[in-house]
Length: 82
Image (tube, rainbow, N blue to C red; front, top):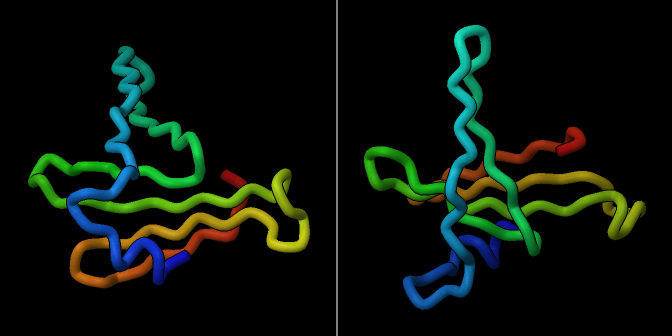
C-alpha cells in the first residue's frame, strides 16, 4: 500500500476529501470519510496526506489498517479500528 501511495502523481484518481467540521460550544471535531479505500487530505499549508484504508470487514486475514503517506516520504501506520 505504501508503494502505491508513494508513486501517486497529479493525474491520480484519488480524490481530495472535504472535512466535516463540527463547531459546537462543547464539541469541536473535524472528521474525514474515505470511500473506496484511498483519499487525500489537503492541509491549510497546501501539503497533502494520502491515506489508504483497509477494513477487516473486507478481509479478516489482513484486518484493520490505515496507511498515511506524507509528501516527504514519511509513512504512518495505524492498526486500530477506523
